[in-house]
Length: 406
Image (cartoon, rainbow, N blue to C red; front, side, top):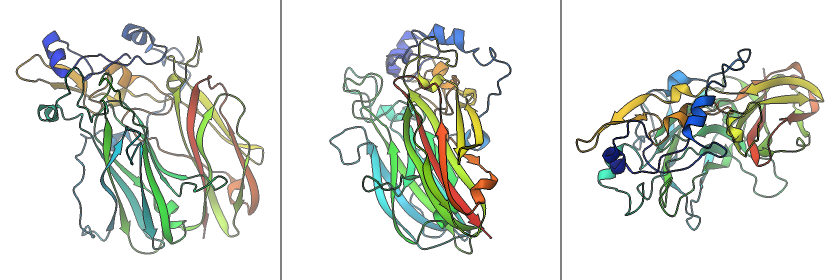
């Protein structure tokens, strides 16, 4: 899974046939590409284990879309457009105002028949034709403003303003492609219908970092993001009585977090908890649950409880093979090289590796927990556990309770 530290021009001169678009980074604990190749049969080594695929792969495997141009206030289909961000730049430079985050205020007017969140992520890494007018600085492997890595990509609403406030409500959890653009659409009807009318804080986070020497990624890399809501006016399809954030953060090795209290309001006829979870970081030594030396390559079983009673369990493990559709690029008559169309700057073997509930360039959809206790009026506690997380590893987890009435 090592990335290969050469620029496009150097790759062509070396005649490489399968490379990343530049940069170098050894994934922690994986000494060489051939070591990964030898271990990519990890899935078949445990034939009794079901390997799930990322939800809605068919919707996402189309060719990456360009960032949408600004749109009028009405789509002609009855949906009204609310522009949340228009080509906002998220930077990896800590002295810049949009370091890893962009924020804005969103005004909600009340329930709607449907609300769809549409995100377009743009990059200076791809298409490679952009390099003609935005070449890497001397001695560097990437255009300076290109971020070639796969990064956490999260959209939240109502982040806590101070210690003790409820955690943020997560609307979308995704991972950016290796240097590629990305288009995301998500139904957020129930969550936004369950929030009080008025102003709400919205944040988009991408954990982008730069490399000062331009090796591995750009020396001032970042991403450009646009976001809009497509709102269809009318009566709500469901009566949302409450949207309660239960947890949002990173869980590391050690004891499970303390239980969280929440209230099921009177009139609730159905309740659910939405869980989003992805594993990252850390190193393991001879851990049979791990494909490689990082938490992102480890199977972990999550368990969820309400009032000390189990309501669900899931082993998170995803096959990322669909996220490398082979494509070729030839520059100036040189020898073509092969890359992954949806992950153009990723080493092929890194893109396809099985992972801890995420793939580069994919949305990680929520797990929906449904149990009778979630519609029982009154006070309850929610708890979860992820045994086996290695020192230095973590799982990004959010949990939101949604109550529906008649």
